[in-house]
Structure formats: C-alpha cells, structure tokens
Image (tube, rainbow, N blue to C red; front, side):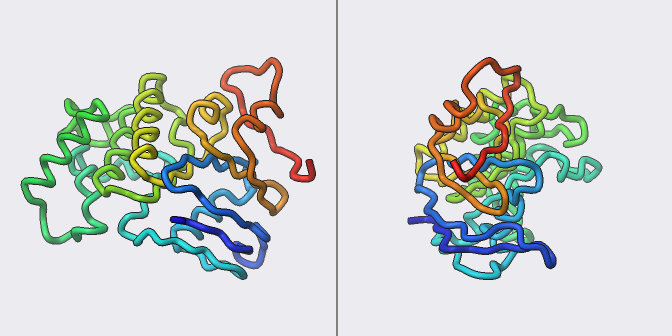
Length: 237
C-alpha cells in the first residue's frame, strides 16, 4: 500500500466538496481521475499532496514528500521567468538535494538522459517562453523524472499538445508505472483513458466511485466525436 484514502471529507472554504471517499491506489498503476468541472479533482489532489487537511478521515501515504510530484496544467507555468529547459529539469533535484547546493556531474548526466528520453535534447538551452505547448509539457515531465517520483499526479497532461508528444508522454508514463511509480492523472478524453488507465476514480455529486476502464468505455459506447470526452457519470448506477 502506497496511498490509501479512508473516509475522507474535503472542503474548500466553508463548502464541502467531497464526502466519504475511500480506496487504495495500487502501486505501479495508473489511475484516471475523472469528473466534471467543479467535481473536486483539484481538491482531492491538494489533499493527497498534503496541501489540504481533510475535515474527516485519513490519507495514508508512505511516499516521502520529496518523492511526490505534481505536474499542473501548463497555464500554471510562468513563461516569463528566465529559465531554460535544462534549468527547469534540474529543479527536479531540489526536493531531495536542496535548491542552494548547486549541481554535480551525476545530476547533469541524468538530466541529459532524461532529455534524450523525452526527445528534447536539442532544446536544452532554449528559454521556456520559446517552446511549443508539447515541448513545455515534455520539459515539465522531465522535471518529475529528475525528481525520481514514486507518486506522480498530473492534471490533463495531454491538453493542447501535438500527437507526437501524446505518444512520447504516454510511453514514458507507462514505463514509469511499470517501474513502480504510482500515477494519478486527470483525464477528459476516452482515447487517453483507454490507452493509459489501469483503474478509474469517478468524482460526481460530492462522492467518488471506483470503476474499471472497460466499464467507463462501455458506458460511453457508440458514435463519438474526436476528441471523445468523458461525460459525467451517475454514481447511483
């Protein structure tokens, strides 16, 4: 058991957002977190990352904070900050190594390996503000690889990126899971869910329900436009 939720209740301000959320996130599995806007996805992520205390219940996580990584939506990235791709990726060492000690040879070697794995070696010295959306997303994932995260949370990592980047990111995430990383990813697209998810946590109406990817896909069977969105589900089913 790496991460377990035990009857947690979560609120934002005076508004209760989620109630009676239970379940265990499997080690080395990719869990898709789905739900409509305002369903509580971001609130749950904040709680898992230790930034929000539950009103009730417990979050049991045996992953140290320096091995928990959160990859937010690209809109959260300050593109005006003067930082190169390599510099961003190197910040992945800060949680365990510290931000003031500088970097050593092994750090730079690992960063080069990470950039090669993500296909962005040629962008090492490119400022973040000059990157495309797909290139930025690869660099952000590179930072989590440098951190050697054991628990990784991602918020819509495939939004506004090119097909090649989707393929690269999906392959890296699958490889991370196969190596033992527990991954929770917010998804809104059926194709991505079918490709990646081992299990699904559906948030709706202030509650949560666990489901299999197959159940979600069967629930939405039939002609669908591309991209195929995941519609809100009725938890009473």
